[in-house]
Length: 257
Image 1 (tube, rainbow, N blue to C red):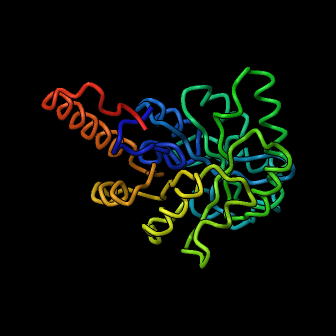
Image 2: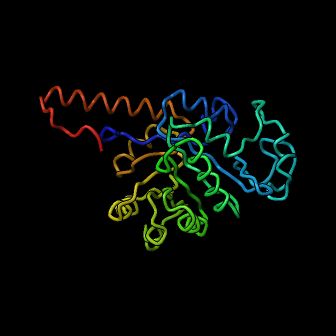
Image 3: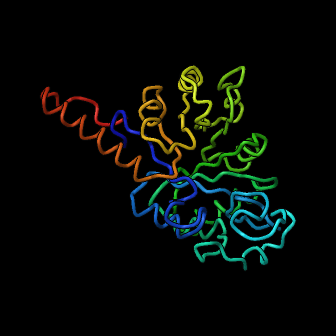
């Protein structure tokens, strides 16, 4: 439950300032800060769901190969800067457990069916709830496929701009949330999404001044590389709300959104 004015905190690719992004180590560090959610990126690599952001090697792992043309076992053998390996989605599910929500962003083609199968298997084996997960993508076709395959799991619509019809694209996807680029965070778009019953989450937010601006626009949460910054902001807002309650003696003030 959120105090009014606070922002839902997704650790973007884990806590990437403390360990290599999208690794089990980075996710474990983020969970230490009691974040609300974890965001990871996945690719279908040879029929396996591997957790990585870039479509090619070169930034974190030497080489230039396309992930979609690699053998998954070969990719898994390569070490990342923190000494860890590229994890599978199943490994991430096991590390996150029921400690936070998990946003699974589908980066490449052919992910939706594999994600549905993996989540069904994990929920069956672990007793987890489908409500803990959120599937998102810039590829709205795969978001729609996720709706058809596993409607129990929430869907997020990624946007890197302001569509002419604002948040209308979310309706045929029966989406739960809009995921908006900070560069295009727009009060009218956020308001339209809210009218359609959607949550508004903004990426990637690493400046405390932007947290204030987004909260004023009505955003519900952020994806951040600096989870501690967002948690500190939320703690300050919560303290201010409690102080206001004490000063007014209004015990009936809203406690959560």
